[in-house]
Length: 181
Image (cartoon, rainbow, N blue to C red; front, top):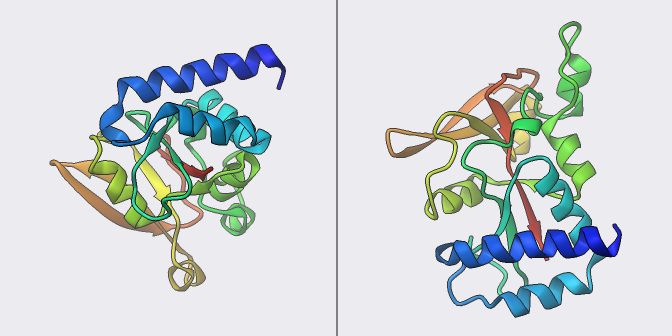
């Protein structure tokens, strides 16, 4: 990433950070910026989150106080990350009408991970997300071993967790990612 692209990304992130202070109370942009300045891998991941429509922002989801957590804060599941099945195993199992990719592979390629159920619920406490779409979330191994995967959305002012076959995919289902810096 060249200097101009890096500066533009940092400016976008700073503007979003300042507009949404309720997502990260008691966090100073200068501290976040200091962590980003020394981390080219994080900047690449944030560039990918931004380029795919995630609108990443620093969020307080609980957990590690020595790092900052960026999460996709777009109102709906990022458009260019929809219509994907859950993981590579699910993608490989499809005999026809295969989607282009899987959520786990896309996230890994971007340098991020899928949100857990707890992280998804914590994000929903910061705003109303996925009112028209849904997002794959990290699925426990015992559910995945049986062929299933989990996804979430928000309807009726309530966060719902559902299950589906991991190889399923829908135009309105994508994934949200998380990055710890």
